[in-house]
Image (cartoon, helix red, strand yellow):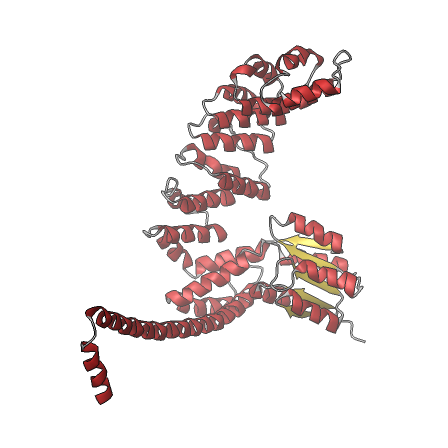
Length: 122
Length: 358
């Protein structure tokens, strides 16, 4: 059985996605990247990841809808980290109400993100 | 051909108005055909440009991420990084490619902090892009100047603040706003020194943005707000009052009380709110003594303050104004009286109705 942990990353900023992919693959994780919430849901259903990283504001399907789908439709308890921007504090609270486990406010340090991921995947 | 000649010949027999309308229709038809051709060309041109831009962006994103992870712990650039820098430097000279490089750097810089963020700042300087941003500051177009300042802010270029400061009283609000954000982003409270020389008004939105950046910066060294409380620019005084509230500037007590007699009503209302927030209740006596001379807005602000600091000794003052002509004031006074809960102050329902409808 493979021990490589799978992560779905939903982020519409292509260069940030690429940077996080490099960093997390270096740490030994397998990354599945989605440019919007719709793609993220498809990847989650297909790969059943150990962790989900999602931006809040995304085209078509937002991060909140992704969290709601994972918790209420798929009934999965996969840890979810939410990326938010300044001024989105209330949306972050909604994300926690829907079942998010942690959040990181942009701009964030990829190094800190790795620490939080490791903590959640122990 | 003969048919066409026949049409022209027959047109000659029509009245002049009909000939004119036909002529105009032909001109419009030709104009629409030419315009359609031009729009089609323009659309194709833009699509091609978009494709080229997307292609370059992908290349630059890949270069940027490789550069960021090719660094070593030393301060100097690694050989792999140097190769990427040389590649990108070649493209910087081309304005189209330079624009894409800058937007790629900005796209990541606005989302990332820490060492990687600093590494992007270093790359911006190493590629010689700073020269182009500074050139934008000398441009005649206000939007180009604003873009230049925004780039300096996002790449945290501190050394050029004197050049940026030249735009302190720029006629365009957008340029002034970018300059203010640059200073506060990079220098925290020290950056607020521009308030000493600002002559133009600081809008409510600008004030909110500045406060938000200050709070994000977590700068613990709060500036002395006293000089701004004495500013001749009313918007600066109001901004300083907001700072006094957010950062509990009790040291400025005397200046705040003096501002109760400021010439601007807006300032006076904000001072009452700040004094209430800071629990500086010495102001209560002053405001009680000249309550009738103040505007209704000030009176309402003062009564809001009194809701938190009422005492039994305020009863005569409150009763004196309980029949005020403004219903909001009457309601506030009755609210305070109810809270004081005077044993002897009993109003039956009929009295209350009478006062509210008076």
